[in-house]
Every structure is written in structure tokens, then in C-alpha cells.
Length: 222
Ligand code: SF4
Ligand code: SF4
Ligand code: SF4
Image (cartoon, rainbow, N blue to C red; front, side, top):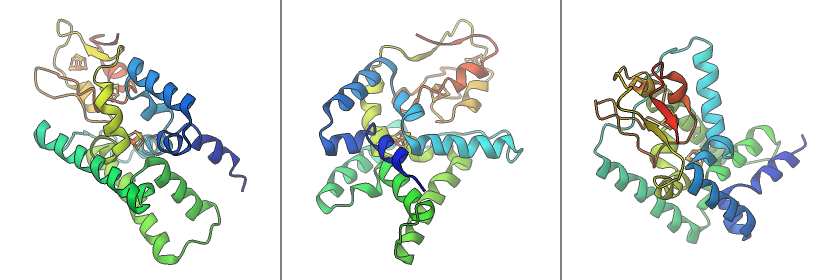
């Protein structure tokens, strides 16, 4: 199999770009986050796209047609503690050469090579890789993109800045009838189901699923 595309894709990923000192890519990612928030998670990261595809295919086939993704039922403070804890673990793991176990492209690339690339991984390692990717994908049925909005250190890092992005999905409270269609449609579980309808922009991946679901035109990107 030709893996050139995998190599090319790696060039625009955050962690490989940091490792390679690819300033142009890093500046491009920084600008995109400043303008559009975590759009990177929707159109660049292969692990994010894989999770979206996985849910899309299974819900499209009628398997659990109406999932109600929600974030973990914990307070924002606890959630931030968990997310920042994984980010700190990720930073620490660099000293031990284990960074690829939490880095999204490391997970995706290793899975592709182990199961489709014909690279001879030891059986135990292959099993661990299989369990990790199975966990990430299966969690999409329970808490939607749990990996992206709770665990992934890259997502948390981008989320520190995406909260202040120039263009964000916003709810016009005057038009909102509190039907919660957007809450159900949000693949990252970042719209609160209460009347306040707050959007957690640190977790929003700018996918516009919520805007498409709103029949009242209350959700816009501005
Ligand atoms: S949160 Fe992480 S795994 Fe998810 S799409 Fe973003 S970078 Fe990829
Ligand atoms: S789908 Fe639209 S109207 Fe319904 S709760 Fe969301 S923003 Fe409000
Ligand atoms: S559905 Fe809306 S709030 Fe949820 S991640 Fe996508 S754009 Fe953000």
C-alpha cells in the first residue's frame, strides 16, 4: 500500500509540526484557531474525522439513530481539571518518549500502520493499539466525541484559545425556543441543555451540526 498520503497528512498536524519546527504550519494553525476556533479538529485531524465518520456510518445505518451526546456529568471545574491533567500528562510523557500514545496523529498513524500498513508490530503492542482505538470509537456512542472533548491534549490546548476566536457559533436567545435539537445534534456535547443555552467554545469543533439542526435560525456563525 502507498502511504505517501499519510506522510503528507502528518505535515499539517500540530504535534508533528512542533517536533519538526515547521513554523509555517504552526502559524497557520494559530491563525485558524484565532479566527475559527477548533476548526482544525473538524477538517485537519484524522482521528477527529475518523470518530465523526464512525458515528455517521452507524447512525446512518439505523444503529442508534438518535444519540443524545452529552459531556460528562461533572462541573466545568472538574472537567477542566481532568482536561488539563491529560495535557500535563501529555507534556510529561514527552520526556519518556511516550508522546505518541496521547497525540492524535500518533494514535491514528500507529493504528493505520499496525492494521493496514503491514508493519510487523509485536502481538501485545498490536492488541494495545487495537484496544485504544476501539475505546475511542466506541465512546462516540456513549458520550459522543469523548476523546476529543475530555481526553485529547491537543484539543484541550486548542480549546484554551478557541474560546476567544473571532468567529464562533452563537445562539440568538430572542429566536431560541429551547427545543434542544441543537443539544442533540452537537457531536461534542458542548451546548448546555438548560434555558441558558451556553456553548462551551473550548470544546466546540466548529462543525455547524447545531446550526443545521435549528429550525428557528437561532444559531449563526459570527
Ligand atoms: S480533539 Fe484531538 S483527536 Fe479530537 S479532533 Fe481535535 S486534535 Fe483530533
Ligand atoms: S435548536 Fe435552535 S431553537 Fe432549538 S434550542 Fe437550539 S438554538 Fe434554540
Ligand atoms: S454542533 Fe455546534 S456547538 Fe457542537 S461542536 Fe459543532 S459547531 Fe460546536
